[in-house]
Image (tube, rainbow, N blue to C red; front, side, top):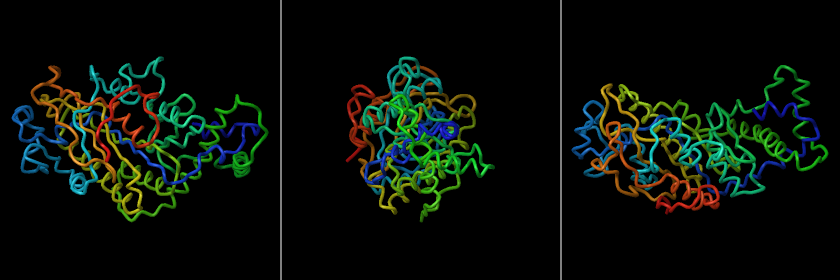
Length: 399
């Protein structure tokens, strides 16, 4: 939206689009957040195969023991997560089970809002901004430019990125992030290009917001398209939405874009009926895309400075429903990838006996997801977490 709107901005707003963009140094640590939309079934992802309650609660959706990729005598990965297992064996995958928040909300929209804004009230007049937007605002101050947070593959900007003075940059695919208002008029396109390369007179601080967002977004669009278009990966990514999104992110990271937090999503995890086939495919897509991404980062010499993490708005219930699927639950597992993660299980699996007595039994959480956010912001990105999130204990997910 900013790209199109800014085509109508008069010259007096153009100070210098390139000057507004933060310089790319390529050395800062980067976080990549992957949303698993719809409520991923943790019990079919990180499977407590030896527990009696799992066998009793899952008749149709249960993963047969002979198919499970066993991690020990109690837990194992879904059979489509072979890449996860390799990354785990190589010390490049950490697992944090039992993540959630108090008084869980079982609505997709409300729970996802809670995760995006990091507040149990969800999006409301008292909580208008997302956790990433607030963090960038408080952590980078006057340098908080749109390029610091980028969502790739989004049809609309994720609420997590929305901030007081900027909402990051969001595009479905790199080539679409460009000015297209006069694509058939070469004269106007030429004027547009001049508009964004020649500074105009200064007219006061009232235009700071406009110049920082619209103009920096336009300046960034050309760089983003250039970096992703020129990127040559030696890794074959799967031809899926998530695979393409992560390949684009890898190109931007390796190209030295100054973005500190990337966001992308994979949908389809709302598996109320006929779960097995759909969930199997989703986890296969996730595995293949993430594994390719990590291999690519390693080959490009970038893996030590990139932390990739997954989240879902909630998990699914212990007992399956009558439609060969599972309903909305609570606590789920988060997965962390990279060269500096603390590998293996970083906590106990939620009890399959002490559960929420609702909707066929929802697993209880032991870790507040805001503790994860706080750790990522403070111990990885290097900015204070409390101004954006409040005070939460850190979790042991990094070495």
